[in-house]
Amino acid sequence: MVKLPVLTHLCFTFFLYNFATFMTAPVIVDVTMSALCPGEIECSLAILLSGFQQAIIGLGSLVMMPLIGNLSDKYGRKALLTLPITLTIIPLAILAYSRSRNFFYAYYVFKILTSMFCEGSVHCLSLAYVADNVPEGRRASAFGILSGIGSSAFVCGTLSTRFLSTASTFQVATAMGMLSAVYMRVFLPDSIVNDNLSTPIMSEGKLDGIVNQDEESDKKIQMFKTLPSIEDMLVLLKSSLTFSQAAIVSFFSTLSDVGLHASLLYYLKARFHFNKDQFADLMVITGIAGTVSQLLLMPILAPVLGEAKLLSIGLFFNCVHMILYSIAWSFWVPYAAALFSLLYVFSQPCIRSIVSKQVGPCEQGKAQGFISGIGSFANVASPLLFSPLTALFLSERAPFNFPGFSIMCVGFASMIAFVQSLMIRAFPPISSERVSNLH
Image 1 (cartoon, rainbow, N blue to C red):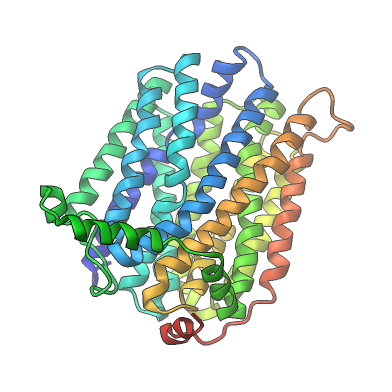
Image 2: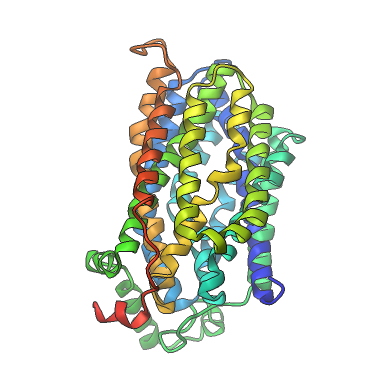
């Protein structure tokens, strides 16, 4: 960051954006249950609606992520970052105004519509921006630092929730979202890999409205052509065995992570009567451990062990901590399980670093967008699998008494990712020319 000041602006933008989105996480379960099932501890409707929401968002992201990554290769990362950061503000502003049932339903609809474009796109584009500016040998550490910035935003956001009312939480989140958009537009330099391909979407001429009509038509045609085809996806998968293995690991890792995220808070509320303060405490522990790991441990361990071994370590402890959640016998066990984030946070930066080394500099957005698309497919499948299972085993209709059964199943999905990661071997990076020749 000292040698590349542009990354400082990216990291600050990334911090503000994640602060705004993460600080609402501890309160959203209470808001949802207050709107749908006031006064109740267990609410199957809230679990199922949350799962349906996540599935629809994942379906939209499945289409949008590869397109966004591909467009950013042509038109620059900054122009594509502007849209998701701005759209994220809308649902936050709705709940900042009111959290009554009608406003909750408005939030629910806008959250689906905006997150179909926003979910994961800021992370994907930020990774591509880093890959544009950091040499291959230092990307694993750089990706780890970026994830560490996200974890520190997670800590600060959830910790601030501990001292704010629910209404103030959404108001502050809205203000921070606006600040991230303004800061990014003012200070972040653009990053276009190939200047001959196109010009930025938000060029000065377009903003002034002085654009030739024929040129505008040509650019619209070019934009539609950037939608990745099935053939493009297959070319990426066939370009490298390591890339295809990383895609499989990414799918099962995201499948388990999304399943845990969709189930855990409702499970803890029903099992141990957790509220927003306990949720915030749990998230702060997770965030602090993850931040320390990514900012201090990962830059040291990645050059020594390599991304492949570090990936396996992260996935193993991810599996262990999920199983520990599922069999929690006392209220303190979830806090102990949260400490495992010291080790399981290695997995996502390592996957992204492995992928970035398998493509050339002009395909970074496409590759990261493809992996995000794989994650979005997992976002569709995971709630459909695990949300009904969670609702069933937290209700009186459970076939047997095991409230954490769905989380145990989530842990098994993470175990599949761990086993597949053991098969990844570090091969030399694939050049841009070789990937291009496959077309």
